Length: 455
Image 1 (tube, helix red, strand yellow):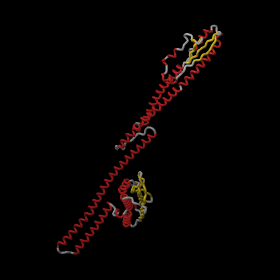
Image 2: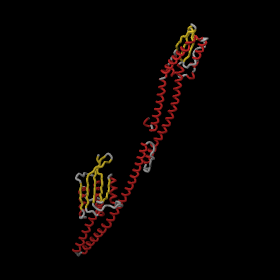
Image 3: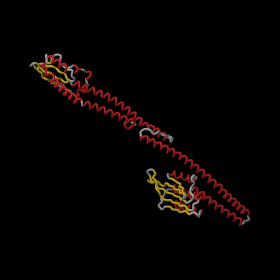
């Protein structure tokens, strides 16, 4: 039952219980203190009445009419609260001087259970007096019902006033709690919208500082998700665009390079066929066409290797990353003998996985292409060393790739080309990062490329 209640209902219920317990505890205290209070009041009023009577009747015999004076004194004393005075002659009460009728007033009588709990007992004290040698006494009788009625009236009054105050406090606190917890409902609705794809949803920071901070965090999360979805959309669009560009480039190379070579091969083969069919073999002409065919085949092989290299590095799977990088760097050294290429590939670089190996290879290839095309550098340093990344609860081994040149650097308004932009998107998709820093000493391309995940 408790688990099904909302936070607002739980707070309101706890508040109501606290107020009810506080009011009940106060009323219980008054009820428990009623008996000692009635008893103390009863003894106090009887003692005071006795001392008062003894003081007044001391000079009674000196009055002109002592008996009338005594009756007047008794009549006046019966106006006191909580006690009654009865004149007794020879232990018999005089007519008309009995208990007060107020004791039987049921309009202010407390309930029976309260009377039973307090359980008062009347106290009667006889004060002897003498008038002209004739002995009699005044009987002082306590009336605890009056005190009990006053206590009960106080309890009822406090119960009513306390209930009103408790209800007012409950309503005020409920209102305050409701306003304080209002952002929770907004947060719940915003989360539902974000879950359904409404990443532009924002929540106005409101309520206590803790809830306002949560609202800010949710807005930041929604903005991050919105940016991530937009980046994903742009990345997918970029992938499709790059695929189209790559297909167009391959189609162009097949058309521009393979087509002429194949046409030339067809022409030379047709010439050889005609020579064979003529019945007059010409060795020199046949050798010339054969040599041309071999040249065309060699050119086709070179074009084929170039296309395959663009699709996937030759030997990367068969020879491994280290040998494939060695072959790539040898080709660059042969084609650019005036540029010193320093290479450091760490021996502790472990297995990073096929995808990571290809990404490392392509990153170095693209960085070197930019160096030789635009930097005008005389020295290039290539470094590949192991690193570790923490992804969630798993650690991933990876590689830190750094290509640094001593060229002219980048211009202030320079924007990355398609090659490095594509590599950055590829590396980001794998969970890594790519940075390009330019200074007076050249350009440094640094990439952190995740590899195989391990617990």
